[in-house]
Image 1 (cartoon, rainbow, N blue to C red):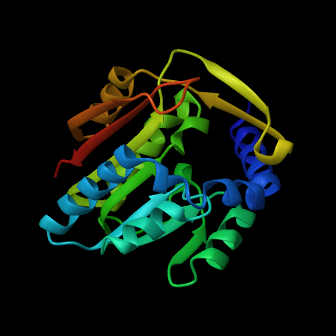
Image 2: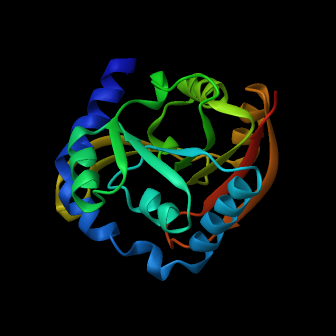
Length: 214
């Protein structure tokens, strides 16, 4: 699968399901106290370090960026899918959203105080993850905070049907926290905390907090 192939498939798939996906996730955080607590901790650490802009990379319909905004975070969103960005702008007109890819992140060096990839890294192939983490390190300020959420496992699954029964063609990569932590350290991050979550009957989740070193 070529680089352009998986990116194009991911973009098209999320363009197809954008409206349905947004409808299902609009109030999702209301029923997830542990996820809200993780986001509140992220917001508190960013504030304690002096604040600044925070990028939600792979933001989808913008609900997480909007939640961070309510916590006083200067959050903005980036997503590969133009249709998803349109939905995010519609639902959260007070926030900034733009189209972009985490594999070629169009942000200035050391320009953000924090960055999160909230279950958006799951579609990135293994051989592209170091490139993505290199971009995350580049755009974060020294000492900036990174928050990752992802599925836990040792396999990749092809997802052919998505939200609302609409067609998709994306690979979902499940990874062990130790493997993701090793990639982060290789990219120049210090992993500060790890949490395992059993919020989904079909697959476990993990969250990592990491800090960009100078």
